[in-house]
Image (cartoon, rainbow, N blue to C red; front, side, top):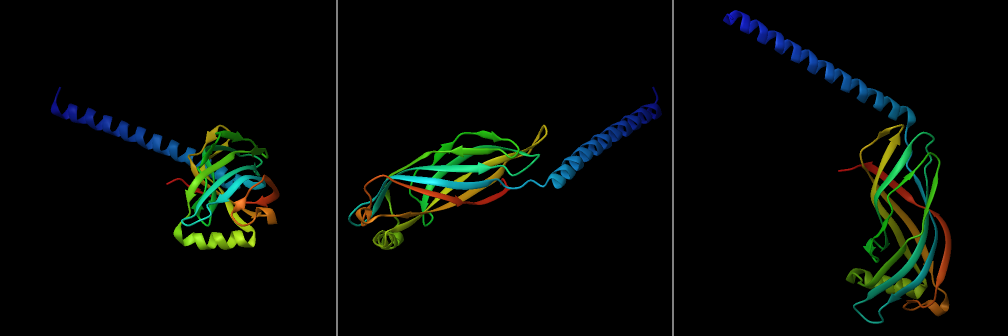
Length: 214
């Protein structure tokens, strides 16, 4: 075979490969465009979270400096999927108690679950924190709150979610939920915390933030 013929066949192969690559790129672009248009039309809304109640079994501060805090509580938190055509997968959710941005309980893992269109889910995890050191700059503030007889505890959920449209499932998105809970002590439970079981019916709406996973 002559050099001329070899060059001709090589050119034809390159031209065929180029056409195949262009065809695959166009196909992938069309699929991405369809998914994007469906996404824009459906406009997924963030799930709604509500802190329904908090039962305090123990919320005790050590009587002398440096303060430590022991906490045992059970919360009931509900979430609603407001979307008519989009499902939600909840993945790697951790719930914990926080006081002025300091963790006061260990994270409790919530079960991985799927929430269909307009469905409601309810979780009732226990939260525990044993002799957690209170940051020095918070010790005086905590003492003042206890003397007043009210402490603002934030119930927080951090994790990931995925959206489901038909058979398509998105990548992971960050989910951050913040639920404020005002714990008011009776006279016999003032001073250094709660010494008896107290249940608070709150039905408190939570702030919800979602974003692309980094």
